[in-house]
Image: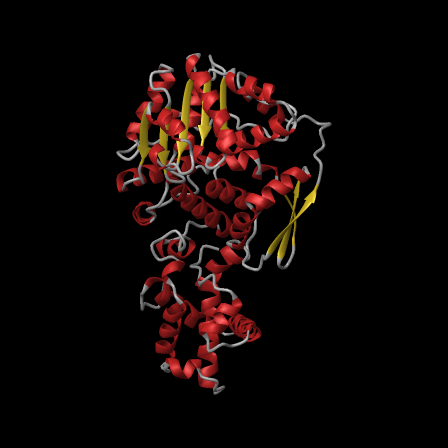
Length: 471
């Protein structure tokens, strides 16, 4: 299996290979560990069908919550593994509580010294022992936020509140978790997302139990709230949050808040709340620079080497390529490494640089938003030496039909355009014609190596603007 894989094999890595554990890793990376631990971890795989997947959750409430908030994102993640998936179906399967597992015992230990509201489907985020200060990698973009968080964990109320802001996947939750992990030994710590604070507030109003709500949230030493921007526009909840905030400050409790923007940029949030946030220490986390990206990739590669006992070595060239080309968030960097691991385990080899470009194409600066139907048509016409007018005409000569079908096929796999949208761009052809063209090329690829080679060359030119025969 160590032979060089062609592009068809690499495409199968994303389109045909399916392992639920890998989907779980992607869900955690793309939607955040907080959302994953609270909701998505409860999803179990049941069965895979041709164009949909059957999953289970323990309650109707969890199913409805996931469906209303995360279903589209989960489906997009699933489609990266199998493009044929068009829907997700859930089955309610109640867990068997008769056996207490080691995980349950461990979870019980983590709840120690942490405030929880009982008798609710909503469980607060447990402090993750894997997210600590000693494994938070620092650089110029996050050094100040790290130092401020460390100072708070050593001397509470030193900066109160501490307000950390930055884009998605930059490490805000890691820092909040690190603070909670250090302080939970000697303090009552509550670590909660703004979304769940909002949910519990509404639930308490409906159940006429606001006294208990106030008691739980105001009787804590350390309050960590993640993604505070989600209280936007909720006037009644903002009112309660303001009074909770003041009560905690009065009793000397430490408040740490994270958001995706600075306090003065928070939309539809009371001015007095923004003023309280601005009155503490406000620090930001910028996008990681090249030096920090290299440190993160190197650290993850070392961890993998220790886990897989040097059987999975990511070369220096690949590390440098990923750290140079994946310029988004830290979460995207970790996600890129996870894909390399998935590829390696499926194919029993570490991908070379050419294969890395295909596996990570949506994370690189060559993503789909630069691939247009017009570009695909132009490249295909040039490749087959026909004009675009000929391709888009109604003529059915063989020397025109195959290039036309090839262009339609490439449009389907390289863009997210719907069948009707593709049809309109090919002289208003019916969506059934588009389906026929895609299936025709797929059948030819199974029997004709030359067609596979042509498709690979065209994909290479479209995605990478490279005329070489190999990716």
